[in-house]
Structures are given as structure tokens and as C-alpha cells.
Image (cartoon, rainbow, N blue to C red; front, side, top):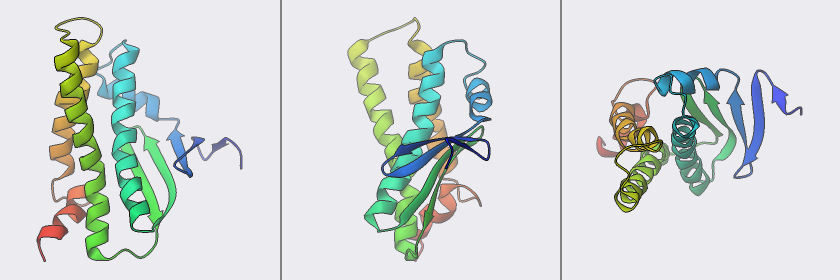
Length: 157
């Protein structure tokens, strides 16, 4: 298979294809508030990849096969195949926001240790902390297409 397929640049992560769609840079630019700071762009990409790797690691835990991890202009998707139970599917859904939560804690600790008040790291920390926290909450809304649609089933049995 070619490195480029169906508009995706394909790499390998966790023995699964990490596919970055050609629209991803547009989304990164928009979500960064049209920042010109590459650290801001990197923070957004990191946030999306960490979220999807959270899903992938729990999917692997439940012996689901990861078809691909896709990053696009509007977010990402961890595509898996298998037959998870309702509980396993809910746990995989939680994987993304749990990974984001870990990144949030790490960013808060780094922010305290680095203690940068202003400068080129400001936007990066804002994305890894504030934007990350907002996305965690939004993604857990019980709305079709978001992780919350599946994740909350863990508690509604």
C-alpha cells in the first residue's frame, strides 16, 4: 500500500496505521486560532493523537483489532473491528478522555514546574490545559457521534 491513500498520509503506531488526512493541517490552524506558533499546532496534534491512542490501548486490552487511527480536520477516530460487550465498548470509549486526562495532569505539572507566565509556550499550555479540559467535557456529552454516547452506558445498566 502506498504511503498516501484516499487523501491520508499513512504511518504506523502501535502496530496499526496512523492516518493523517490532508485536511488535518486546516483543522489544526483553525483550532489554534490561526496561531503562527508551531508549538500550538503540535499541542493540538498531540491532543488528538493521545485521545485516539487512549481508545486504541483499551481496544487492544479487549482484544479488538485496530484497523486505523485517523486524524482529520475535525478530530480523529480509532477504527476497530471485533465484537466487544457493552461494557468493553464503554471502556474503549472512556479510553480517549482518560488519556486526555493524563495529558491534562502532565501539562498542569509541567506548567507548575516550568512556571512560564508569558512567551512562546503560553498558547501550547492553554491548548494542553484549557482546550483539553473543554474537549473532555464536550466529548463526554451523551450525543450521537461523541464518546459520551457509548461511555455513559457503563453506568446506566
